[in-house]
Image (cartoon, rainbow, N blue to C red; front, side, top):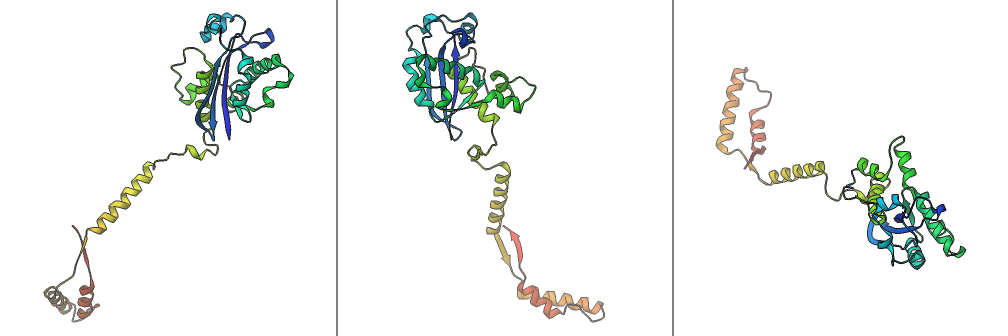
Length: 252
């Protein structure tokens, strides 16, 4: 299954007010593993950044001036996501902005969902952790994803963090590829015991009773028989024969 983890940064919170996308960041997953393929572009929004957006992203109108416009990267972006399942945190926000950008280019581009499926990790997190904070930062803390380097919001950085959060949040859902490739401690211990047993067996020496020992054994049994009234439960000859075939195992 091909998935693309996606995030955007924008000039403000509402595309209905004419805000635009200033960065797109995408990470490709194939069978839940990062492939190394990425798509990231800063974009010239052709307008000023709102104060709040500039503060959280660190992006300025001056920095974005001269960057490609959305129209110039649109086809490349759609080619990258086409046919994939898009993994997006608070998908309505990002999808709304992308659909707005597509609408500015003409109806023949359609909507984002015409090109790819969408999975909203915010909705997924609210199902998993009802009543708790489910922002990306909160999920990083809850799931042990290191986000200490996230000083500012960035589309590619946030897509990388979301990919880790998504994989951690959905681990165990038939993802056999994430099983450890090294033996568990229990398996290693069993293997060590098995090896030790075989090594010990290889060092075993077999010693058989000699003729003198058998004779002394018979004499001992005769004395026991005399004290018991001349009767043995196990006749001396049979006992001696059994001893002749017996082996004493000694560890070398």
